[in-house]
Image (tube, rainbow, N blue to C red; front, side, top):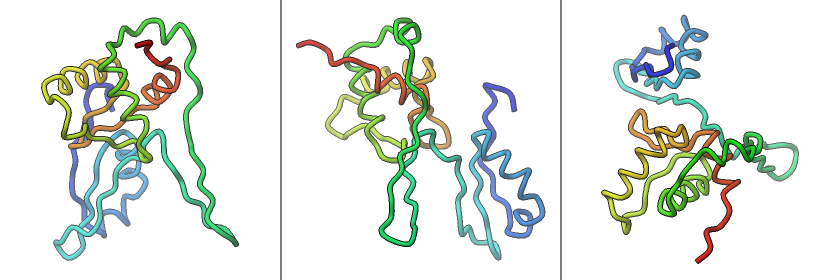
Length: 151
């Protein structure tokens, strides 16, 4: 798919999923959202795995939590961003979630949030598609590399 053209959310039947699994999984990997119906009723929604994900592996004993994260950011990439303190706070809040999906707190200024989220999305740090806001792998790397702002 093209870079700016995100696949639309769509619904497929269990039969279509069974017959076209590979093609449908490719759509999901490209950022699509897939609802699966059985006898005309939606029974599942399949979405792409966030770049940062807490995976619980069940073995013979207790479950083991493994955090999958992208590589660290280089100084040049960090130097090209000009983030305000507010944008830094939002990015760190998004990075602190376990799944990568995030929503601003109710106590925050919605207009400031909207402007900051728009800029973070333009920088490729947040992705606001399919009705969700999630932090991208680049966003996770940048948030980890941000130094605390002196007060």
